[in-house]
Length: 566
Ligand code: TEU
Ligand code: CA
Image 1 (cartoon, rainbow, N blue to C red):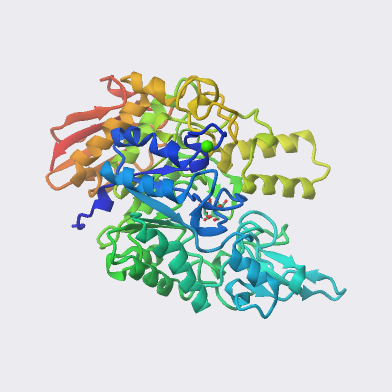
Image 2 (cartoon, protein in one colour; image 1 turned 90 degrees about the vertical axis):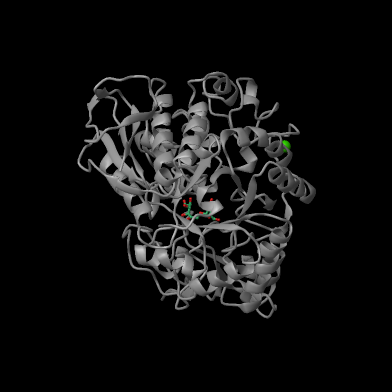
């Protein structure tokens, strides 16, 4: 039986500060904007806010390129605003966790500026520098064939010292060298302890499996023969010293009552347990990508194979089940800032089914074991941007690099090919999650009174907070109710045992959650057809449904929860 902890039972809400709420009408979200909505979040049932990077940054990768851990990006506010946010959260019984981005910094961080200045600079070894490789014609090449997650080589040549530095992400995000003791000590003091002392309640730990690189820096095996550069996860994910590094981070946090959730993405059960088993004393829980990557190729986010319910069931099962019978803990999430909107991907974003499929997903998510995470706008059913948006409407460096790479490899691409590319981008780009939150139906959706930094999704007149607060049948109020039920029946929903009943059914998802004395029998129709389903073979009562029907078939996207005694 799992031990109870506040962070296991918490509902966490992720805020993407640039797009959340603009208080001073400069078109960019900010911390005072967040503060102005804390009652809204508290009414929704939120216990913890996870704030995506609000640190000082040139914003090449939306703040995941940090130039100063100990200050706030001026357009978002000041340290004083952060103190206010922390105390306003606490006075409502809510908590605040920050994004801990310590695999890399920005090129603008003073540490990197020193490091790149000369080979003898004391901070040279704080980043990962390697000499060029030359071919038989004397042409210069990167030290190995590793590809960056954001397209192209993972190495950038720097003229000043005639060497390359490693950047697993953007060129402007050099990887820190965790092998160096001073580097680690400075990361601890600047990124971790500085904020713990200011009162934050924990961290979402970015790229938590990547700090320890294999030191041989060999060429990666060929995954895509047509490409010059190759995925290199095997040489930087779960590396030799990663658990030593995490144990130290956890030790720094141990005097405080904080929660940690690591972004790990992919790992085997055995590997996962090393990070999140309680006795390992590393992280409390982690994000695995089984569910958010259903249908896509983990090595290339824009290669998509399509959604089917069986894969989805498998992903939900495997992402949650690795903790069964252990002292570890897991997470439940179907959206974040790196993935497209869940209704578009797993539900149906046509006007007819948007709301009902959103409720089906809310119902599902609130039944699953682990700490619950909701991404801003998910609670009102924000969906992907319209297909007719042009490449200029997309702003994410990941999208734009991919587009540029396509254009340079296919200079003569015909219209159909470009259309195909735009269809993939529209479906899978991170930008889909990053449009301004739709607060009301005024111009710019009540996010701001001026034109926002990023285009607002065209559907804001139909999809917004204000109208849903007034409508007792709205998705927003359904979320509120589901979050309450999740806590009321927490031994079933938060801590219970999960069992899939109908693996082979391509339309309906049926599962049982077993609690201490009662269980839930959950049926959800993931299709646009009326679908037959079976009831539990025990006395039961309907706990909740996302639709007022009582037919013996499930209507499209209808979901129901029945309760029975064990
Ligand atoms: O993402 C790291 C990560 O694991 C990537 O695979 C991520 O899925 C990315 O979207 C690849 O397309 C984290 C942050 O969540 C992401 O926003 C940052 O861009 C990245 O780190 C670099 O800091
Ligand atoms: Ca602002």
